[in-house]
Image 1 (tube, helix red, strand yellow):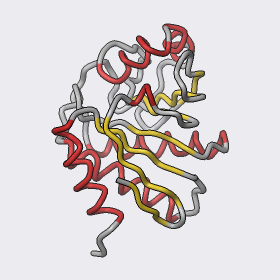
Image 2: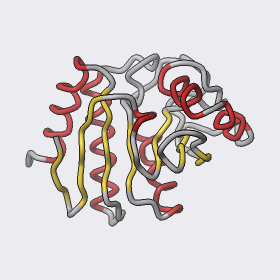
Image 3: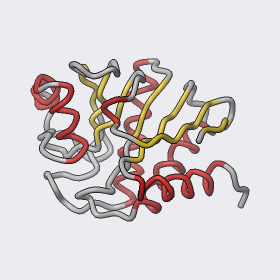
Image 4: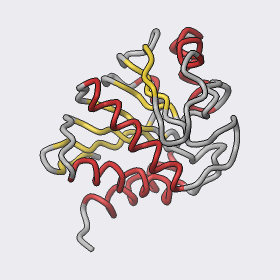
Length: 179
């Protein structure tokens, strides 16, 4: 599924975010930059431990902040580490997800990148419902695009078949329906 909003492609894919060929992928990190399980663990496993070593140099990064590192062996050029929680495996909030997405988009603007991929932020150990988290993410992306952020493509990556419908519904509700 893909469509355009303000001339920017919004795409939905199913798979592993580590396989995305974009300028940057987002890691829903913890403030300590410890890359244990979930998305962070996959990034470290496929991209290399050097990604975590580089991220640890910036720790602690508060929720609402973000840092970019190299992407190691991944296809992406950068990993943007945007904390959704302070400590590893904590529950998170929709507000923290919004702050993390906004922080990731600020890094994209600073680095003048065109294509970014987001996994479900806060949907794993963070404990948030997929639809609610993705809707908060999409609303934050929409606000950034409405305020003038220039991107070529924003990719939302659902990891499981059961998540893809929730992603689709949230993206449609935010980008395709007038309130």
